[in-house]
Image (cartoon, rainbow, N blue to C red; front, side, top):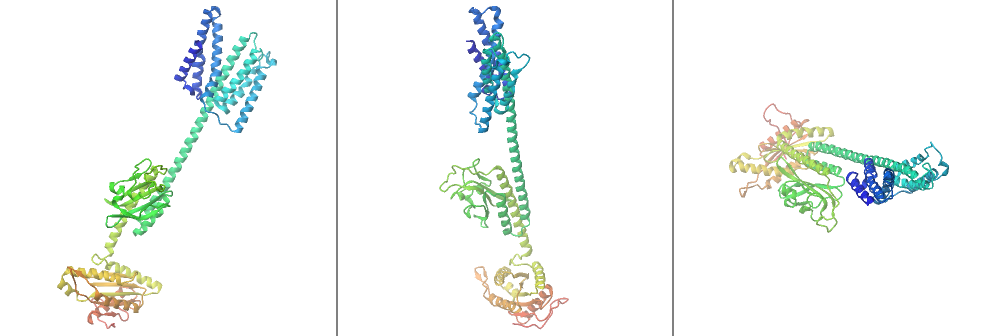
Length: 585
């Protein structure tokens, strides 16, 4: 009964105050175990057992303390030596040792048994007084604590205790006394102390190893975090570089090329696309794609993207929405992200990113293993915002540039652009020893045309003439509106004969120009054209332009509807136009 109560009380105290079955994991819990179970709980059994012996007449009342101390010390030693061995082998997982550890443990056990037999089972050491030979086992206890943990320490302590008890019962060893009971009492006290000391040392070693492991894991996580932060910083630097390049672009095509390159570098393992809303505002077209598995299709309707429907980001991820956009349902990706690009209150398109593709036939997104991380998500948002703002600014700059160099009525280059371009082409022709032709043309009797049909009809005629001149010129030529009904064409790298032929072709073709206005067709027109050539008629652009102007004036003077080539070197007069005798074709 006493042992049962001892076990129940000890188990309760250990579970309540000493971490239960993990009592030997920490040194403080091992010490609590020694006090609560080894000292306090065993006192209950010793007290109940001693009283039972005295009441049964098996012991004298005067021997109470002797019997109690013997009983208590035996139970305490059993708790400290045997209980840890049973608990550790029943609760700890099966050890997985390497061959080297198995060999080391075997050598440690054999050498420890040899030392224990020598110290505790040898009659030669029985009478060796004042020589603490029993402490020769301590190095092996320390060895077990450092190399094999709590379970190895408890096991070795149990083996040494068995060898020591056997020697004490035979009356040999350093604790041998005249009475076997006295020998066992001394041995039990020593082995209990060794057992608890070894367990505490093993627990301290285990705690240190756990701390070192935790520190290594923490260091690894910290290093991983630092590496991730470095990669993120590198990507932010790339984003800044992309933003700077986009701000320096002069065309949308340049911007798309830069976006494709940086999309590939920022999202190396993923595929993506930049979809732009077309001018009709009813479809979305892929302007940029990157990655090994580019998204499909290239074009889809606005209502086929949840991001455009909702006006905010749409994420299909393991931790987000599992509903793919309709434009991805042909073969849904493992993870996808659509971010609407909004700048200056206008939705320009969407930034799309996807990770992997689902197996063919899989439509419901089951068994996903791809994911877009939070870092990727933030990076995609930043990139989408950067692109939207840059494209909006680029379109604004292009619009302002277009307005500054284009005539709003005919969409031809204006006079300011004409003067800059002519000087540039003349300098280039000078460097390359080439030529530049200038054709100045004027609509014959345009004032009468306006008076007869109205200024709105005159504007319609000028617009159609602008389109006509665009069609009649080469890709590298420049068609400009000089003012009113006068136009100037700059034709680089052309001979005098080809320039005259081009002018004559335009004079003939313009007669077939049909101008629709108010449901009818306006009357056909004729042109007068003056042609001048660098360097024949001038060494600077202004002089060549003046020569073409003089030739145009001569064409008007000779009856209109004709082409006149400037003659000789023209010089700019001080005022007005000057008469000259010029050839006509």
